[in-house]
Image 1 (cartoon, rainbow, N blue to C red):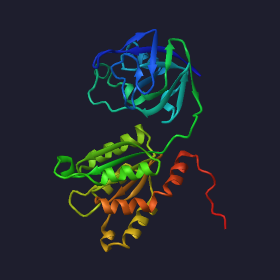
Image 2 (image 1 turned 30 degrees about the vertical axis):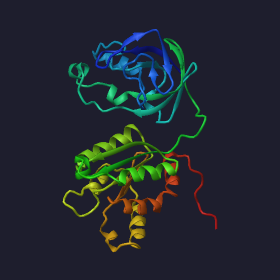
Image 3 (image 1 turned 90 degrees about the vertical axis):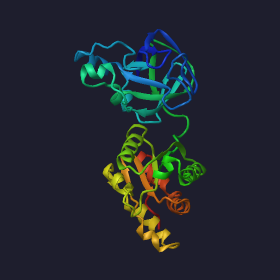
Image 4 (image 1 turned 60 degrees about the vertical axis):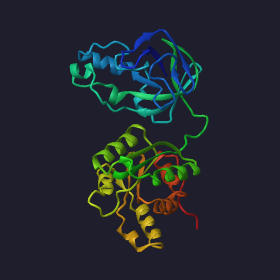
Length: 312
């Protein structure tokens, strides 16, 4: 249990948020009147009062709202809550959607102190039940009313697709199949065959958004610019060879060229990452191999799976 020590709002983007005594939080929107509210996954931002106090003790001398945060809370380590956690204050319920953020342009705090705590410790959420909150109100973590759905992202790697010279058919196809199997597809990304770009996206989606599954399509062959497997292995914590072996074994039934696919499957944190070929037909054949069983692996990563030993 914690308490709200500050509520901050800015009416225009690019301006510092200012403290207010009371705020109205709107479902699937955010803090009423705040420029960063809207229909997206980062409707509300949290910071811990204790972390701000530690930073100020180093000489930062920042005021509430300086980091762009909406809610400052004391006694609740919000940055350690997993994505999907529900936080309740009065009638308002927030669902945690992201931990940390990318810092595209360094702020004045960074240049003065050499760091900014928001990219590392900021917690983001969406509003799933609205209401009013005032400074001093208690804030707690509560159990969810329903299970957290599997969340996934699809990344297409294609130089021509990124340039608009070719329509990406594989990415949208995979998104549709995932949705048919009750996955919530939170991001679909089209990038060129650049390994550094892929690594950056995989790290962000696994570490900040804490997704259950990431599927990549493209870049698994012998072309000089096919580096998807190498980039994927560079960000992995653990290897999952069985999935890619099963995909190649099944694909060999259709074409011997399947043995030339170099796709890999790995785990980063609690996220499963699977490389798929670039063609729509091969993607459909590949995802059919694992889509009905991958949920058990996700449950194990979430630590919610029941006993999996086979009964003879």
